[in-house]
Image 1 (cartoon, helix red, strand yellow):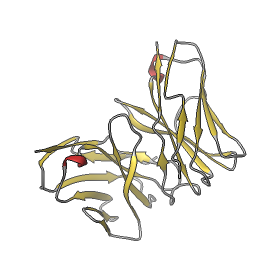
Image 2 (spheres, one colour):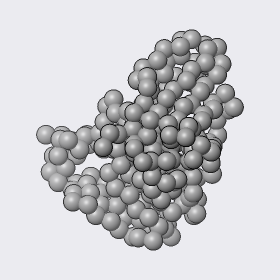
Image 3 (cartoon, chains in turn cyan, brown):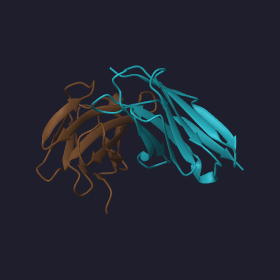
Image 4 (cartoon, one colour):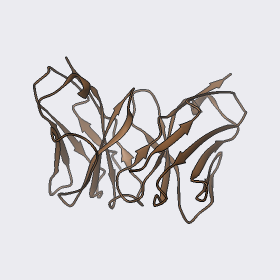
Length: 110
Length: 114
């Protein structure tokens, strides 16, 4: 089955700086790569996703890049704000349930 | 539009008991997936239902089961509870079956097994 590795497990950045979270996957058949944000006491919230026929996607301060050859994808958050503090999960799936990374705890320092 | 609803939000059971969790998807969504979230194993896929049929199942023992009703509402059941079943159980709904459709998660049911 699919295996997703996510790094780093904790990321601390100054407010206003950029944050980058990286994931690798193992199954070359995976074709859908969503990113979720989870705040304390809440379920994961989809923030951006990318499909295998696209190399990059941007939505305001958030962008995702996908390199299918290398089997890795990354989340980029620019101009970080206090409300960006949360746990972020990447995921991948070839055709069924999502396989998630272990999560990155993003801390925004004032 | 109301989001995914899960009931109950919190549950305490003892070993050996069984439990049933409920999920109401977003109106119009026909696919429901269930996930288990623990600090050690993270988010793990349990199973996915579409049109009352289980389409996919994760690597969990047969004690974990589920079903979907004609109105797309879903339930999952865990029998003979073990301490290791303590977790946050999350339900996600989407318009059509995964993988191409966005999955929207509910707040989860926190199950504690004593």
